Image (cartoon, rainbow, N blue to C red):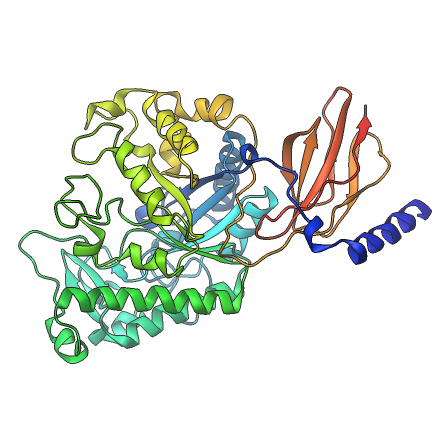
Length: 482
């Protein structure tokens, strides 16, 4: 106890005396990379594996999934917790998701989101809550929704398009409601990020016009075209959420994973050298360039779901285009990777086991790229063409800390203080949200908590502290053990 008291007193001296400039990073750039994994719940793509499973099995399946992901080297998960205007947590605003129990509105008997976040943090994985803002249902019959579903209570908010139901993004009350849902979730749960994928206005359906002409007539004053008005509707959602999320919890990141082509050069000389049929700007009304330049997002994760050298959309050309988009803005760039295409024959480069590792190598060689997010979980864990093994033994063999996001508030904690070795377990005292353990100057692991069981062999160890936003302290004193 006397040693502990002395250590605590020393730490208090450090906290008081540490100048701001001294809180520098111990890790080099090779230790910093986002390694994300999308866990999709819509249609039970990844988790839960099917609706109606007992809560105990849902929990066990998720724990197994995280254990396997962490073993591969993943350090962040993006979990879909509002797939179709329903929730994976108790909410006074929206019904329970049908993908939990098979019946929309039916209580699964526990709070899945609280469990999901806690289990991710137990493994020191970032948890990003993935929301779909406008999609209501994959089918078109409002009567099949839960009786208290907001879409049934506000039928004027709802449009049918392509055989599915959507909230109309042009109605101000819809935007206010979507923001209320997301902010309520952010307030109540210990999430690390709020995440959208590529669904804003729905993907175009041949021969159908999105049915918002009356809404445009009512709310589109001042806009020369319906396209400009639609983009403004989405811009308002993004900008307002950015401001309100950061006001509520400054450490929570807000990011979007859009379709991989903003506009191509045939349409706009500043666009990418691509031949894609869909554009974010013109078809989904998602003006990612405006979001980036205004720093309304903390990160952008374009879905670059094409091979290197592909004529229509060349990964090798799109990657530097997006890196140029974020250059100088402080917005972090991650790349969405189509793991689900590995081993398929359309196009044939996906049959090459080196194709996806080639993408990650290009990312690492491109200034401004901070990591990748892999879609989807079940495909990855099925190890297509040995890709999961390749990550575990080679590409992700060395651990990595999530990079600092320059647009997110945070600061480095004081350095931890190592305590005398107890058995084979290293202990320390510190004020970090997590800690990085270095062995002989190389990052060995990151942990939550203030202890780590040492591997065999005699090595020199040091520990650094990290805040919620991955700012890193100076190292503790270095000690040789074992």
